[in-house]
Length: 415
Image (cartoon, rainbow, N blue to C red):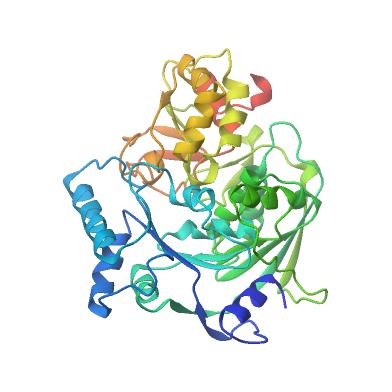
């Protein structure tokens, strides 16, 4: 068996599972945020009076923080009432950050565990060797009531990456290149299992970026064997009692893909699909009005650091709005302590509170007709950040701020 099969077999009390099997799995952690908790709660209250385990549910406010409409405020009040009624101990509702950063930071993500969340990017936690995936509100309500859910065991694709990422090339470029190869629907309900010396040497922040975006090619989950950096990250959070799941030497995969990191250049996903990926020289010179640095994909400290190296001593173009939103309060504080926020402030960037911010087009940086944005976020669908006549390009942090300086999509090496 491969990694995902082993984890699902254990979670469902089976010795062995195969792709296509339906399993009833025990859940270790279940999560929802301010946007998805209210519909989950509404269904749950038709099923049960008490959650299966209040200590295994994590609730986070991140999508509309602070509340920007009466509707958002009412949604959040529903969640506050639920927290009190059910005695949910793990809640982060005062601007702590984006759920997919907060859960690992606060020690809720453990290798070989099964984690579900009412958000499509719950696949992020596979960076720690966990099986994690998104659910709809109805399915998550059943988890809140019973602690279980069913899965079809997915086919697995093995992604091998060898080589060294060059200057101004990061894991965001690597996952965009992989999505280009597989296509937006090329991995639908499949598991992406990452291997190779490039993956082994990635930092925790970089690994989270990759597993975060596997949903953009339709994958059920993405998963990696924890490396030394990952184990050190866990140890800092007092997590020592866990098991790392490895694939069998004769593990079976539907298909194996090989990628060469040495040859990779900065990648840009062009409107209006994440798999519409091009080398940066094919889109360099495209005029932009907005640049966004942040999100559950690239709002981590390492991302801010990469951006600051390019931005230091430069000023944002007068016709561009650069929005920077750290993925968590801790990252924000670290960026203050090390001077990154000062660099951003002096460059005329707009520094926002931790949260999802402009990513979903609900508030902060909503675009009107004919505006163009380059962003470190994970989606560039039609109308994603506002008007259906606006345009979103996706890239790594260095490209985003280099473009903000020039007022057009720019290779950081040209700053």
